[in-house]
Length: 419
View 1 (tube, helix red, strand yellow):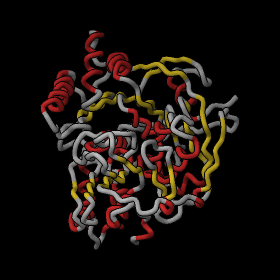
View 2 (cartoon, helix red, strand yellow):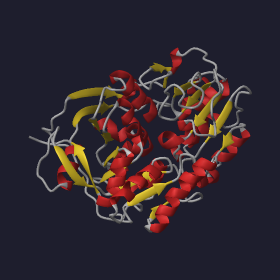
View 3 (cartoon, rainbow, N blue to C red):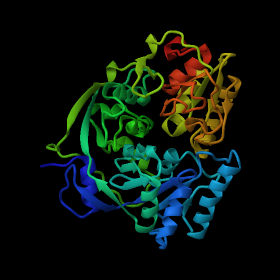
């Protein structure tokens, strides 16, 4: 019997020819990640073990959630992680000014490669499946133990095969695809399963699309999302990853719990209504739902391609006077490139606020908290009640195209209404 991409990665890491869904294994990992919220408790657990870090080059620490620090408590958390990084000479510690949003930063820095296992104390660690890696989020205790051992335990997940055909229509992006899929199967539709994307439609998706899709695999309950390697993957890795890597492909006779077929050509811009990502509707059917704020950014949609889409919509226009528009490039490099391309001028000329890289508003941290009764269209990944502020506020998830169009109109709008 054949294996899925995820099963092959796990099997290779433990030196076996075969694993299958349900097996319990302990596997070495290639990278362990924590941020300024999850890092301090993981460090506390690590220190109880009384051993040195397993490999100072295979731990990544990124202060991005409440950083640049918004208050004394967040400053203390960042200091805890900073002191740990200095004590153990952690190679991949990214201080303010050098940091970015972790799940955009690590791939861009070449810290992720095909066939590797990456675990992180953040649920959206599953982002790196776009590069054919097995990446998944874990709790702080598991991460603290991995700091010392370089290993972790897995229950080998079963898999769902997502067959993609066709090409994306104009103004439809990876965010629309993943929101559509979550709308189809629900927020628990892939619970502790691997979402494996394949088919001739994969080539129609940019790397930014794939990062977005894998990032939100967790919003369907998945253990991980993963794509095969193709020419686009190789082009992205070139110049970033210098160590040897080996792509994995699913066997033709791999076992899947079910298969889902999606024709990309039939997709439309969608928006996910409060208070679950599965509450997906076509933008064209949303009516004129008045909004107070839009956010373009986060580990889901803060990449250069996402900023380009927002700039395309906002160029030569103004944000509606009743709307606050917040743009957050995901890394310093993305910020610089956006400046060179003129995107930052477009945003500021449109009366949008542009921030240094931070997760900020995505988790209700800062830089865009919502008040009672306010509504936001956001390119972030979750719209749970109270996620971005007051429990009686509302978050609508959408692509950068839709968010930017909504900023201009003052209500949830399709990009076709503006462009």
